[in-house]
Length: 186
Image (cartoon, rainbow, N blue to C red):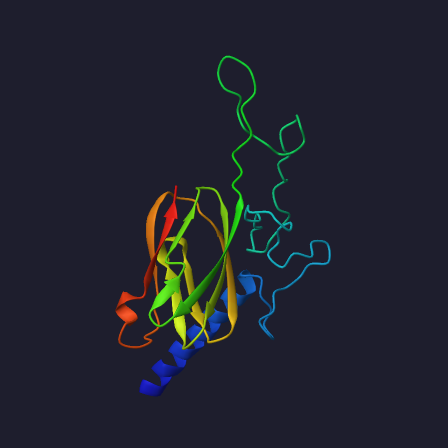
């Protein structure tokens, strides 16, 4: 009786898995997405579309909803609303590209302080000159391993103001805990 119950559970699992792969749009063989010749996108969407495709009664994808068109006007896609009272709104502020070479060595970063303005694109060229170090700037999602002699480049937008700490997150010797720097965004 125990074997019969085990077989029933196994059969139910196989049926559920088979049903899920059929309704999710994946083939039974290699797991690659099914692609319809009329709509080559595996997800049933136009490339770049964020709207989910509509589904038919069997769970298969049908044509996606029509794409929206940008508002008429300059054609640039700028949807800035003019200020009340007429006139035009100023274009959004564009930051500058700021590049810095940062050297990591026991137990400091050079420079120890990096200052930029909000909206700037920051490009850091990071390099360890002695042992393996890390560069962690958590407020901007930067976490890099720095192997000696190899340059690592990171790029991000300074999208918030304040003073943020970056530090080595790879144990590198007795002064590791003091290996910090400051990233300032005005």
